Length: 283
Image (cartoon, rainbow, N blue to C red; front, side):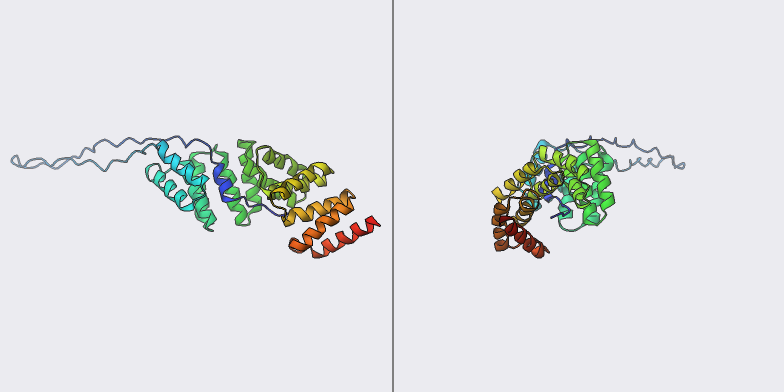
């Protein structure tokens, strides 16, 4: 299946490994000098009252970051929200906390709020690749594919090993059948350790299109090793075996499994055609 991949919330968040944005401290203003009208000698002068000073940002403590990191690793949405907001009460421009909070709201469909928070984080930390990567995820959710591509490319310009951006950009290229570009970015995601079955499936489709059948087969086997009923992998692997490699008996075995678990959406006729081709090839 050639589907755009909306990368999981956890993956987007765990990409946030950068150090927090540099903190800036604002000095409290000096007391304002007030010129008063003359008063009677017996009257005491009124004291000058300073304006309310601007409070400087309080540095985020390691324990606060530890709480946020633990919440992200544990995939606890409420703990992510609590840890991120606690950091932001002291450091309103903390990029990591803004990123985490943005993806918390993204998961709940609050896309405009998520974009606002990411834009604020980018304003203070324009060299943090993860922010652009997550912005692209939100833009995809809002059907803004062209802008999403720009965001993913920006993330990769900053950090060529940004795995989340590479995986999502690769999915878009696969959908557009631009397999040359797809291979470059999906190879990056794979090299960086991404093993999400959707990414492996997209990578295998790309390799198949470039006649790299053995490598594609290895990827399908890896997917099915963890989930032997993965419909996309079963369908695409059967297609590879029957249409490209002429291994009809093995293809039939996969087709029988596929018929048992049910194929991906709108593939029923294609599965029948594959089965007939495999049977004909065995005669």
